[in-house]
Amino acid sequence: MFTGPVFFMLILLGIGIIAKNQSLIVAVSILLILKWVGIGEKLFPYIQQKGINIGVTIITIGVLVPIITGEIGFRELQGALKSSYAWIALVSGILVAVIAANGIDLLKTDPHITVALVFGTILAVSLFNGIAVGPLIGAGIAYFMIKISEFLGSLI
Image (cartoon, one colour):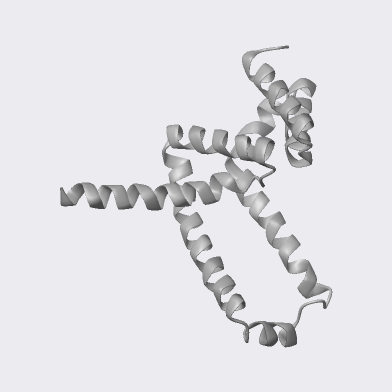
């Protein structure tokens, strides 16, 4: 019952409680319950394979709620585009989405990078009150930095 992975998750749960990070507490608790109830072995491969896409979909739904409720409409969009900060945000959103898209492939194809990114995200969530979008964005940034490193290496 208290295997290495379960012990690791209990440590993460403790860190989440100490750091008062609800996302980490809920995520670890759900995974432990799935494991202990006995359905984890069937669900974990699906969650691992589709979890990022499901999470991105849920975040997207959250971002779109103000549009469907009428809080944000064409008038607000038009007003926002008159702001230089809005243009910076627009370009930033495009860059992050493009960078993250490259990161998905890196997460799927390079296991040791994935471990480092996931651990970095766990540290950021538990110790620095970060948000667990880290693996996806982190993978995109890592992909970008790897390509720069490869390019600079080819020049030498």
